[in-house]
Image 1 (cartoon, rainbow, N blue to C red):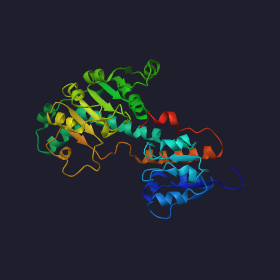
Image 2 (spheres, one colour):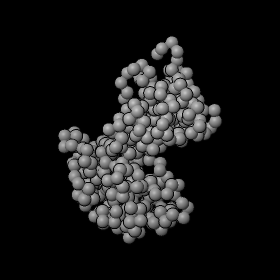
Image 3 (cartoon, helix red, strand yellow):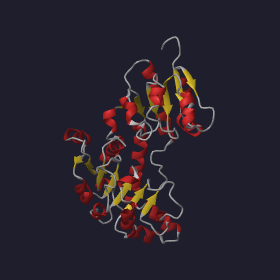
Image 4 (cartoon, rainbow, N blue to C red):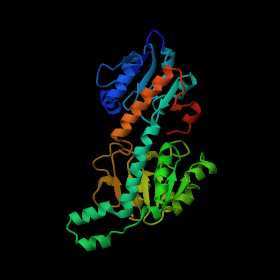
Length: 338
């Protein structure tokens, strides 16, 4: 670093700051330069503009207001946005990439949490653990309950993964050791990569018709929006498990609800068109026993959050030392990322 300390702007709300930065990360950040912290618990666009004056790098996360396309014209010295969350699509406009602003994100640090969540949902469904629990709690007879709830081995199942990004690959790495046959739908995954991962590349319809479990991990792009509709859901095997921890926009939610209500498939849903999920949502109805719902929680573990914050503090350090960045998002990557 130069004699004059670099300015680092922390553009995190108090809630996000406590969630993402432990004491070690804060001490490390303070050692990198002149760190500016928000004065209030929340931040708005005016706060962002104020904190960015003279800043070389900034740390962003959930709750950071989106940058406007002219941000670098007002702050030409800003070299890096280090985003402690995942997607940068709604935070950093494409124009800022074109203007030379560098961006890193911590999406890879979320992957392990989502992958564990997906496997947990698959195990829960295959063994019917929630049904065993509720039937026993409701007074069911011991052996009758055991006989009434089918038990299936996850390792004997075929699992379809739609999307081979950070999360999709993390799910694959967990499932392959179980012994699952893993089918992957992703136009950017080549055969050599698939072989190295121990999975098989297929088209979407093949994955839907052959899989016992389907898990979505694709980004929302023009070609993937509502990619799963009534036609695609009808291809699922009876009793198949449909998991979505990615984005609700990938699925026609009305068609999905119709399919779940038919009782033909099971579902595990972590994302919805309307979030928070309204209290009167049909997905909350207790009679919908073949779906498990969660509040967009798949990526949220304490360990992952602190790893995300630490990764971006490290990234700012690399920038200031003029070292290669480890988590950079390029303009070319932006068009196919979540």
